[in-house]
Length: 237
Image 1 (cartoon, rainbow, N blue to C red):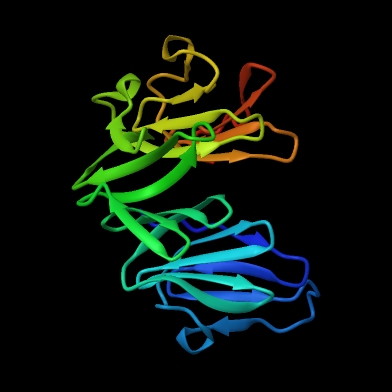
Image 2 (image 1 turned 135 degrees about the vertical axis):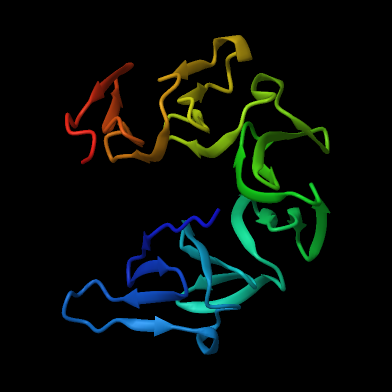
């Protein structure tokens, strides 16, 4: 369930790779620097790299570190971390190998124990969604009124991933059954299930707000202005 993202800052570029974190200045002629545990990484196995504002978060198999001004600060240690959601000032959700950790100031509260939590996103200012996996099955969970519950609309469905686009929609990627666009302002019966039966393996939103999906054996598709267009005729491309 490892997810690697690349992020760029004003002063430096970053690339996540399994087993290392590389930093390079924006100048192509500048040398790469290999960041290791001595540079502040809890472990060398990188689970994700995520930028929020000026903060660069690096989740590893041994904990979470945040780079601020190029300097690392440990944030959550001694377990694998899969995601971080800074919800508001001093209020953070951390997705770990053993549940979701809510960190408010210096206080940490754990929930969803026994689940590997791989993605946490806001559904509304007070409601949060998380992708929680047990063994080989992932389900979509909702945190509302201080309790996690399965999202009824996705009961029995295998969840592959979860995204939020610039228009504030949530996109729920299903295992070999397309993708569901969720407008939090609409009731569940109005959430749109796109490309049913399609095995989508990759998802990307470009700078123009267009949604791109890579598939297993069906090429690349683009979603723009409410319509899907197949961009590659060669299914093996």
